[in-house]
Length: 74
Image 1 (cartoon, rainbow, N blue to C red):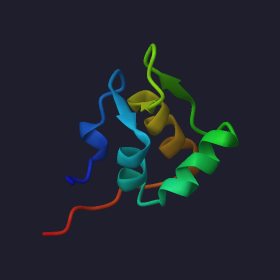
Image 2: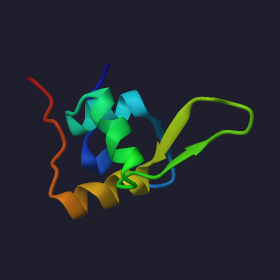
Image 3: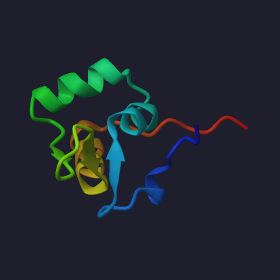
Image 4: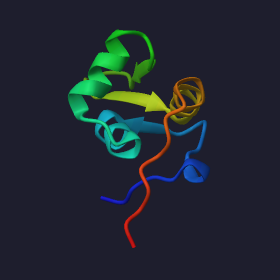
């Protein structure tokens, strides 16, 4: 899976929890905890169980927490 870079995060795009975990270099469970604590807001597409986080929400979380994106390995 390709690691996302901050300048490639599209504020209006939605990302899966797995993508968010990879991007922030966190475990999936930690991302769920952040969502439960209200630090990441989620949305669901109509009729689906899958949870998504908006790019804008990811960027806001990074700015407020000082979290940096995982760097790609060369």
